[in-house]
Image 1 (cartoon, rainbow, N blue to C red):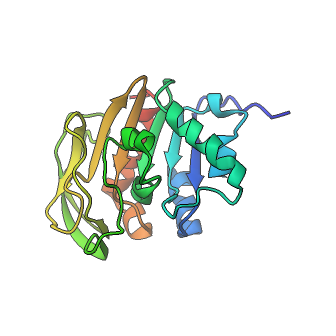
Image 2: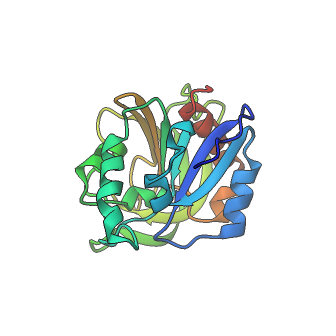
Length: 225
């Protein structure tokens, strides 16, 4: 028996972590600062087997399932793959954030979610621990980036290929060591999907422009914008 999620009128967000460490207090501070969002932290097994999955408005992927092992339980692998292939079948929103872009690198289903391929850092020169970027807002009229001016930020660099051509590119930047399409969104069947490479630590999470985009992104994914 599972408990119904409280009906507070807020956005209900499942925040999925695992496979990579992170600043727990800073992460909690970021999500607690979001207006109108009730967030539920969970690992990938709980996400894939959730009895209340249909009650969430948004799923935030911050996991890094990129090591060839998806779960501590081998019997969950098929379940996780099944749920991945079902993404897009509902009106729920999906946020693929930072190192989650590297998850399931050999999965065509997750390539579709990201609208991107060759999502791996297991090639020379693809990872830089810290880069300084001047970020350019490409889509100033999009609900995710509305009202945001160009800004500077510092974070990890993932030198990945650009997103697919049927994406809306939201943010670009001026550093040669990072994916050229810093943030993008697309429609996957019935679902809105937002992908954003920035977001390794509190250096980025506390940036006012980052926080505004994050807030508006959650609202857009939940169809509140």
